[in-house]
Image 1 (cartoon, rainbow, N blue to C red):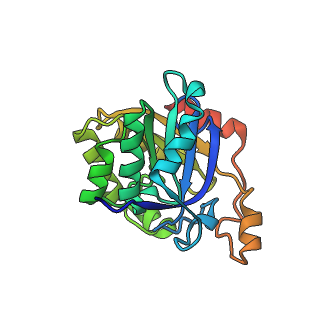
Image 2 (spheres, rainbow, N blue to C red):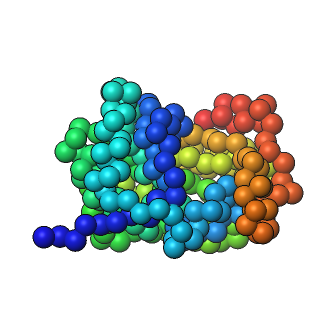
Image 3 (cartoon, one colour):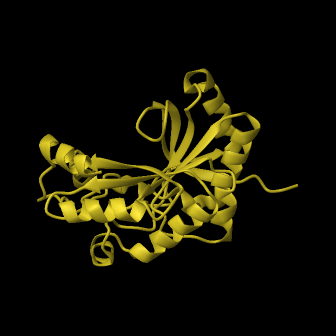
Length: 236
């Protein structure tokens, strides 16, 4: 008998509407391998924190909301970086498949190995965070390379896994037309990409940094104006 896989969970949102298509049961897993300067959930970094759940417990809870999912909704595993717990992702998604629940993975795409490929085999859709289109900005503000993310995207394309690219727009960092055009051009190289979503940089996380006595690296950067977001979206 296989040992039951236990996952470290940061929090759960029972009826989410912004983490994938439709209404979704969103599970934020604990632990992250990156230190993005724009991160709004520093409380997910520490893998030793969080509450433990079995895969069965998570799916049993998600099934209670199945009637709200409709044809597009389902479960989303997010983080932190959920693929640090790739075996757990595989277990949760496998049980979801048995219960007719659509599976979606929200990831940075910064790591890829055989366990992760196994988890992707039971993943219906991926929300891939393309933080920047320049490698130098990745190295300066994230802690990994753009090339590792593109390798991940290439694998999604080979496996024909529907993918939504997402990017947080940060004024003075990536809020320029050149970046959006590069993101658009990049997306056209991969048939698996369904669309691109641009998300506004927010600073409501400042209170978390203050509570944790951490410096928020982008505290000096303003949130983008609605007009700027509309202009950038129009380029797409």
